[in-house]
Length: 66
Image (cartoon, rainbow, N blue to C red; front, side):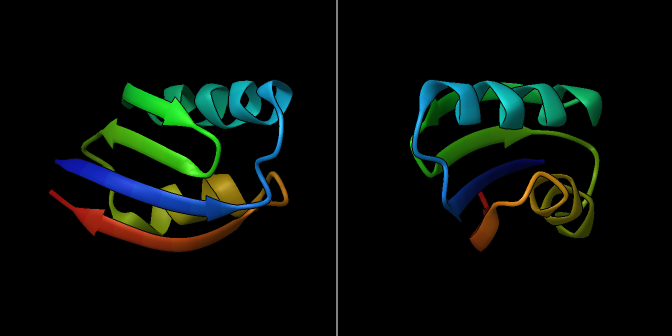
């Protein structure tokens, strides 16, 4: 399933890299990754995506299935 994830607190390229690595750890295919805006495709659900991002210290504002 494809998701659009809006976060809060990703303010630099290093933050983007950390979140990208966390999503890849879920087996996700990464689409666009911009400050606070991530497109991913994964078999995992919203709860797993949220947990992986929040474990890094970022807030998940919304997750929308596409």
